[in-house]
Length: 308
Image 1 (tube, rainbow, N blue to C red):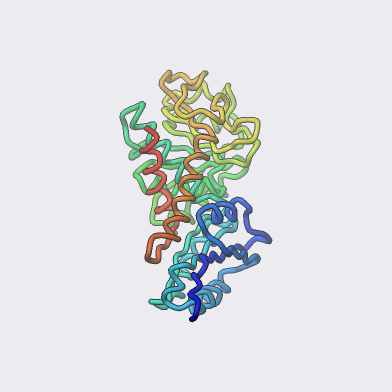
Image 2: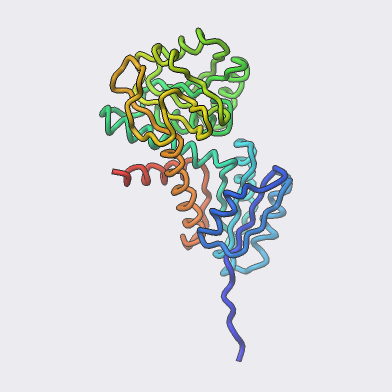
C-alpha cells in the first residue's frame, strides 16, 4: 500500500541584495512555511524563469502550498519584480507573491494607518486634505508612506536633508509610477526645515536610524501640528519628544497642545502583525494573491482599528 506524503509549504524568497533579511525569514517560518529558500543577487530579468521553475514542478495542487516573497532594498524594483512574477504565471499553475523590500511596505502601511487612527480618535478628522511632511522621504519607507498618504487624499511633501533636486526627482518618479501627486523639497538648513514645519499638520520621520530630524527648538515652529510619527527606534529619537513607546501621547514643546506623537515601537507592533497576516493569507487563503503596499495598508488599518 502506497503512503501519501503531505507536501510541505515552500517559500521561495527573491532579493537583489547579497543576502535575504533574517527578519523576513523568521516571519515566514512563524507563519508556517516549512521550506524557506533564499535566492540572492536576483535581478528583474531572472524573475520570470525562477517563477516558472517554482510553479511547474508541483502540479496544480502543489502550487497552493508554494509562495514567492520579494525582498531587497529598492521599492520600485520590488514592485517591478512582483509584476513580472505575476505575468509569468500560467493558470492553474499560479502561486501567491508578496513584496516587502526592507520591510518598507508593511512599515509604511503601519505608519500611515496609525496616523489615520489617531487623527480620527483624538482630532475627529480624516487624513484626506491634511498637509503631510515626510522627512527622510526619499528613502524606502518614506516613498511608500508618501504613496499611501497621497492615495488617501493627503497633501504630501517629501523632504531630503541633502538635496531638494533629489526630493523633486523622487516625487516625480512616484507620481508617474503610482498616479499620485506629491511634492519634493530640500531641508538642508534649520530655517528651511522650520519654514516647512510652519504649515505642516502631520510630520513623518522616516530618515536613517539614529538620525534626529526635528529637534526641540524646531518643534516650536510646528504651529499647526496634529500628529508626529517616527519610525526610528535607535537613539536619538528622530523627533524630539516622540519616544519609541509613544502611541498617542502629547508632545512637549509644540504650540498646539493637542499635538500627539507615535513612536517606533508602536508602529513596529502593527508592522509585525501586518507582515504575519500577509504571510498567513498567502499560505492559507486557498487562492493565489498578489500582495504589495495597498494590501499591506488594508491589513494595517484592520490591525489599527482593533487596538481600541
